[in-house]
Length: 179
View 1 (cartoon, helix red, strand yellow):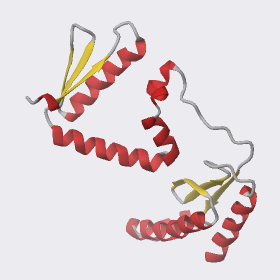
View 2 (cartoon, helix red, strand yellow):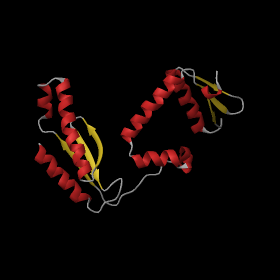
View 3 (cartoon, helix red, strand yellow):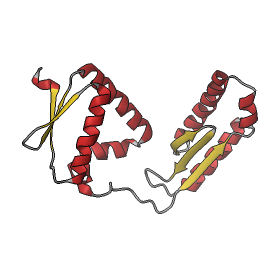
View 4 (cartoon, rainbow, N blue to C red):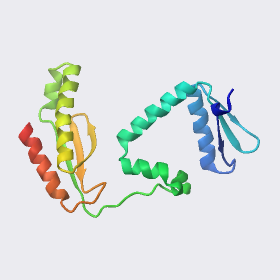
């Protein structure tokens, strides 16, 4: 086995969060076909038996993270050395004095979904949400998530904006005009 096929992580046998790390690493190893060994000198060795599989999983995980977290949060987590495992504390979060939130549901969606194929439904939602995504960019609104037929967005975060209410109202009006 090549040295690049081994990842060694230090840990403390007395630290409960490190015990959790060992458990998670062991579980992840079993799923990915890796071997985990706990060394005498408080080092956790993860042997990458299937390196290609691991790289693919890391790539897939990063794609999911990029879809879930705002770019500035990812950069803070990855590049700020003081964020290293949050030093046993909860991760820091931003606070915003004032924001505006918009939830948009498609009227008659349940009845419509009963009369269409799953592919037609997905195509329709993709078409509608693509327009909403463009409107979000146009109006400086942050898309938080889509849940079923619900489009969830906010203005005034992740960057503060004193015109957040105006932005959301203009977006809502544009959304109505396009439907």
